[in-house]
Image (cartoon, rainbow, N blue to C red):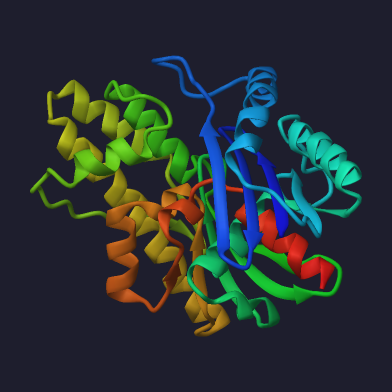
Length: 303
């Protein structure tokens, strides 16, 4: 069995990877009503509180190795204090179990979890495109095999300003939803029958989402329905991602494409991409922040 730890900015998560597949235990961090995020000190405190109870939810035995995310991305200067909690607990756990601990990034964990969920884990041996869409990241990555890190991810397209998850969460809080707002905004959007003509703002392969929040605020001020506002914002995000992918295919060719990150579980986005491209999506439990990819990383490194 391989154990994964991930203490991201909004979720405490554990995963156990064995012969029966992957089992997860995770808990969203609490954000006060009306607020749009957490201070790092609050995230660290909640992770420290959550971890013991989550450990008791998994039947852990015959541990062979431990994997943990220790930073957002595998690049110099990538750092967030919340990942220190997972790293410290993983170090202690590995010493207690007498096994190795393998350290990776939150982003690599997302990609590996998505590939596993889509039954496409063999893509670690091939060049492919991975979209990482979350509260802090709207990036298209060129992923290549790497001897030391399993996979290496290079940004080839991104949002130049507001991130997809930020646009969704800020709109949701504006509409009175609890943070994080993705799931609730998704549900609202599906109740709207309105059609929007949206031309995404692009600069080369990159997109811009800065105007989405302002337009949503104007719609709310004009007393437009929450359902229509939700659909507008999610359509904007979906069209922007679709435009990014179209331009990437023009430049890099028709490589396999995998989507990861919480925003990737959105219904409108999935329909938009599947209607126009051949791409793979993780199941929602593997799209949202999770430790599954860290457990997978441990197994791959230990073999």
